[in-house]
Image (cartoon, rainbow, N blue to C red; front, side, top):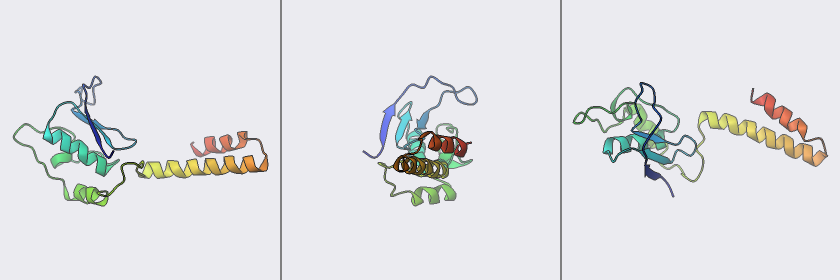
Length: 137
């Protein structure tokens, strides 16, 4: 499976007191949630799957608010377009490596390295947890 789409009724307001029209999970960046079948909202959320952690733009389809009907822009800004093209072949079965994820992965790798080393040396395993706690501060 690459991308999954589901219809949902949002119950939590976002900034400005409005209910969202669409969303994407921010872990796998592959599960799209939309309130209604609107091509503008669907395309907006689909582009989030390729732009990953980047938020909204000021212009065109990646704006944070839906424009009035009849005034939709279905194009990406040049910067957003480059981002989508950079990720066009991404593997949706792998958690994408955003900058924050890369930092977290390196800390997690250090933790497992310490755990493995302590285990092989027969040391107390509390030490790696101490290192992890300090790294995450």
